[in-house]
Image (cartoon, rainbow over all chains, first blue to last red; front, top):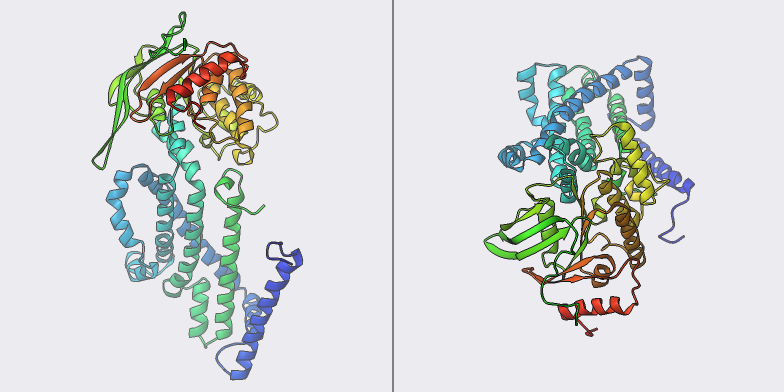
Length: 260
Length: 264
């Protein structure tokens, strides 16, 4: 087999499974050899997961986390896309807002937790606010860059066909920038999923983040902590994979490189 | 050589003036640098005429075309279409870019119908079908440009332009990115379409053969700042025999004018 040939189909599944198996084995034997009483083995984590499922708490936590992400991310999309498109459209306005945004952008949403609690109290809204903050900036920035990078041929062609400025925005600039906007949305969704866990550890009493902190506090159930961690990873992956399917829509495919 | 008078050839007799360029000069200023791009251009183009603007790369012929389209305004002088000064782009005169100008997020149908939002749905569909056929893209109606060849994209862009029924087409080196065989085919296609629709065509090129094969008149431009060196009437009927003595005479005359005769 040379470096250029595609791996066979079974190999593409086989080797990742082997790697995962090896990691699980490493985990298992590390726990055994060190004789730790605190950190759980894979087997205990599996039991913990089954226990959570049996008591029907897990689904509620998953749904609560997903709901918060949906609302926070959705608001960021609703506010961020029109704002980003407008700022990309009027470079003068962008110059006014840009310095402020560049300062706010690198701040971790976690830093806003105390502020969120002052504004919204302990509860759903504080968590949603934090998710919104985390998702908002990548979306706005992707829209600004997306519109700014639209080749001038498209703008000129649009104007040539007699489009008014709002039509130009809707029929040329938005679809032309959409691939780049989708990339921004995907990054934002990933951040939203990171932030929800942190927010739930502090601001609310349900969700996967709360499950982690609650399992630790109520009896040091590290089997449940690790189970929740793995679950968070799996759901994050599913969200990302699902979102990437949007990139294969025919009207945006031109903007992405796909192996055929 | 009899055909190479050093004066601008007058408009061929009977044609009504469609476009007039009157003492147009253009100066760009950037970072304190003044670049003179166009220097006192005077030109009249008749209704239904096919005119090639020919000049070396970077000489300013595209700038002139952009000014004709209304994307740029001249620093001095005036461009008029049907006696009215050009101030902004207008669907009556459509600019055709190199193949990159088609919208990649729309299908062939979507691209051709792009400028047709004001007509009824039935007419829109009928016009799309008509121009799909005219440029030979039947069977590709639902295809996205990404999946089309360079020549097909270029034909698509011409179809999109024709669909809004403009009076003028302004083509900016439209076949420049195509391979030489496709380019020859496309020239034939463009002439066929022009003969069917009789639009006024302004065609920018740096290819001398292309200009002499296509145009009624070739406007030979100098290097920057561009001025008109000469306007050559190509008095050969279509289809043109590109090995005929008259063709070679006209072509060699232009080569000589540009200073490249027998150099290669």
